[in-house]
Image 1 (cartoon, rainbow, N blue to C red):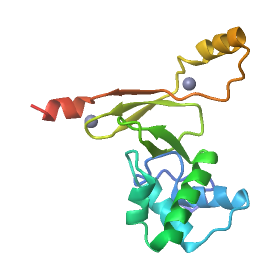
Image 2 (cartoon, rainbow, N blue to C red):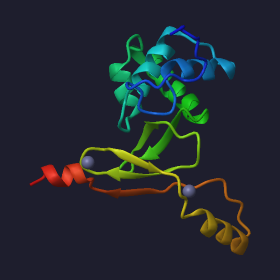
Image 3 (cartoon, helix red, strand yellow):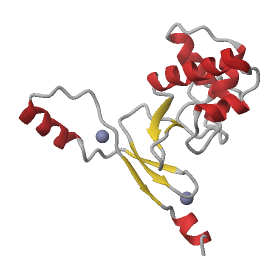
Length: 160
Ligand SMILES: [Zn+2]
Ligand SMILES: [Zn+2]
């Protein structure tokens, strides 16, 4: 078969979310962000994770981001990726902010207290309530968070 150049995203098994590292790099560049070696390493480290992760985990793992300037680069880059929808920021079972790959759409998660797995779902049970509350209270809503905490089937199975 002729090797036709594919411009659509190649589905990579090593990518947990909706973006490959290459697409995330292009997305950042498209929005005017300078692409540096540390940023590439941060993107690669973040997007290979199937489970929610903290910024500190990326600080520990990503090559070339040592020291305080590396740490602030990690925090800043993760915030940019979240603002672009490459990552989304959620809360884990202890209320700690974590990132998870993917989420260009409004999305909530089931979060397992055992293994940290976050299962996304697109239905939003809060939107109507938020609209009603906003009307009744003359309140302008800027957004909401909703995570559902519990224990996944795998963790319940292996806990015995
Ligand atoms: Zn679990
Ligand atoms: Zn919602």
